[in-house]
Amino acid sequence: MSTDAAPSRRAALRQRDFRVLLVATATANLVLPLQLISLTFWAIDTYPDQKVLLSGLIVAVRGAGMLSFGLIGGAIADRFERRRVILACECAMLTTTVFLAACLLTMPFGDATVVAVLGLVFVFAVTMAIDVPSRTASIPVIVGRDQLGPAMGLFNVALQVTAPVSLPLVGFLVGAFGPDKVVAGSIAAWIIILPLIASLTYTKPPGDAPLRPFRPAVMIADIRSGLSYAARDRVILPVIAMVFVMQVVGMPGVGMLGPVWMTEILGLSRAQFGLIAMLWGMGALTGSFFLASRPALASKGMTLAFLVTLFGVGGIVFGHSRFVPLTSVANFGLGVAMAGTLLTSATIVQYQVAEEMRGRVMGLFPLVLGISMLNVGPVSAAGQAVGLPVVVPSLEWVVLALALAIVFLSPALRRAEGDGGRSGGSPPESPRVDVAAPAEA
Image (cartoon, rainbow, N blue to C red; front, side, top):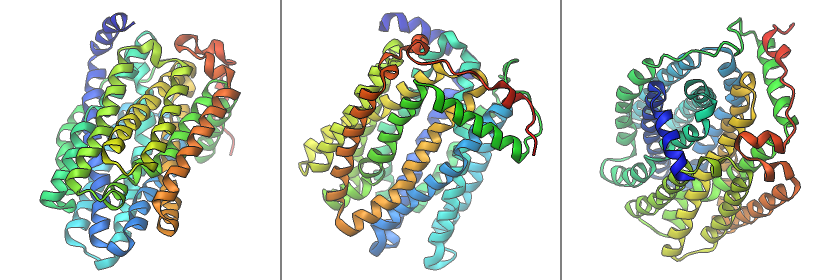
């Protein structure tokens, strides 16, 4: 299987725009964990009495931005030139990061600076919510449907390849220079990102939605048609449900509050946290490479079912363990399961979805991520009230139960298999009239 995949991967990499997109994406994903973890440590240092609550609030505000604009970002991806959308988003992210670094370095509003920081985190998340659907929906346009499976595998590797570097690096950098200077230093990444994105040349396919005025009524109609399309498809709906379970229920405790868990519950230093977190990144990279070399396996519904179940089991071990080596093994497994879930779910959906609906359906992924981040607020509040050692393992038991229930109740998901994925579900009719014709106000 992996032998057959190698020529396919090389064929995808022969596309210049795809190579450019991969490098730009890998560079951007070196910056994102640096920023988020640095902000968490900044909150711990600056507001020690509210460290758990504010650590969760930073992630929750980021989630609110992605939740608010996730569906809008998908509609934009189906309406405009996607490469221009990505470039505009990267420019906005750079500007936001400059202001964010200035706030952290100078504390212009004293203790109230946290309000400005949260506002900038929200703006950054909004740009991410608009960027992600355009970025992922661009892949089939660049490489073609024949190379979609290998290309999705390579794209997921680009998302994860920097994790083993960025996670231990952030622990070292924060300890050496402080979180404010780490965020300021992340600005340099856009020296690479912006020229790469500006050099993209691909255009919307001829059959895609025409470029036309994007009135509010049209946007609402586009979003409604995208949601209806996804809800009718017997493969896409359970795939999104599985991602929802992992991201919204499972990730807040073991992933997004990981810095607090490692330093406060396990008593690790920040440098030690970086080393343990590196195992998550190594697991994510291992899972990504394994599935990228086996695109047929990465497009199976049962692979997705196994990975979400694995995430639940790994989270249960993580939440109950106080033995650092065992927690490290669980962290590695969580990385494998998380990265594999994102790769398989996106691959199955990319094969399943009609081109004119691609941006809106792929926009559901940042929407779910936004809900996940937003849920960190209640989870951190519950952790502050009753303790993270109670909250975290309880959530992971729920993940395991819900994952098994979805698999049992969704035969179409169990049968889904790459290009044959539609044979497992019911091909929904494409609401082209809603997409192509202006909606009446």
